[in-house]
Amino acid sequence: MGTSNSSKGPGPRTPLVPSWLGNPDPKSTPPDIPPQRFRYPKGEFTRFINSGGHDRHHLGRALSDYVTNSTGGAANAARRMGAATVTASSLLHLLSNIRDEGAEEALKTLNLEGLAHQPIQKVFEALADALCPDGGRIDEGIAREAFSAVLGDLDQLDIKDLEDIEETHIESILETFIWRSIELRILNDIGIRIVDLPTDAKAVQRIESEVGAFVQGAVRDAIAHELQHSNDLSAKQAQRIIEKIYSAAFELIRAYGEREDK
Image 1 (tube, one colour):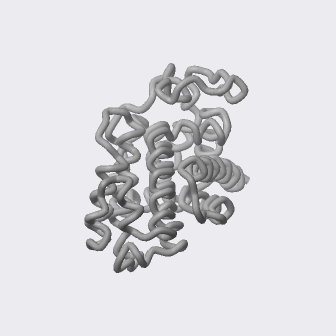
Image 2: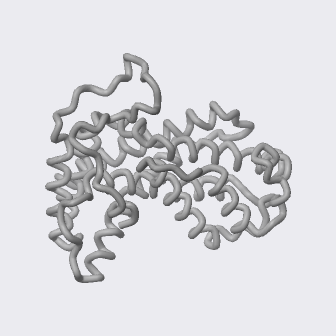
Image 3: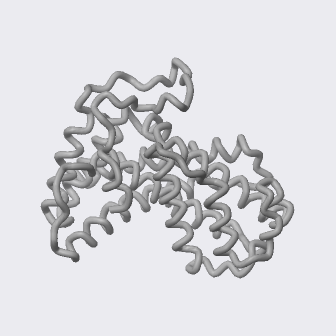
């Protein structure tokens, strides 16, 4: 399950919002959360895994409680995305500029204009290095792995040249990056050190598929609602849009989770 096995996850005293994000506005400071804030969603996620991925009731409980109680709400969950938010914002800004100004002009900001007419895979491999620099934090690793998912999906978009990029392409690229980053964040928080995955390969595939589909559906709905006017975006406007998408996606995950629990 991706980076869910790459770390031990957050400790009970790990801040809900990483300190490197700076001092948050006092009005948006996350509420105090009990030290064992991930215990309940971990337990429910364990039960979901033990069902072989069949019991969505427990998956819904795990995800809804994760957003509501473990992270203190959708806005706080979104703020914990850190590097993924930065990467997604930069990606939206760049892709919008490519669509509006042309590839060569847009890529100048990253000194990559020489790649303007190269194969799309080569361009995005260079963008991965430019937008997802190496680092040791969990959220940086999440951003890099989410971008790897984008690289894996490029063939499905059938983009022959960057000049051909359209709004639907931008939405698809962002959807892949955002849903994968959220999935990895959740698994790093509640999918660590709880149970060994089933030895049944089909069960493992079912578990991954259920979690991925759950999160991807929420992200797709959030993007459809928030990414409506993306022409002539400034960097700050792109950042606000991405922040709204992450927050809306977590809120939908909470709502969809509660629906599964009924």
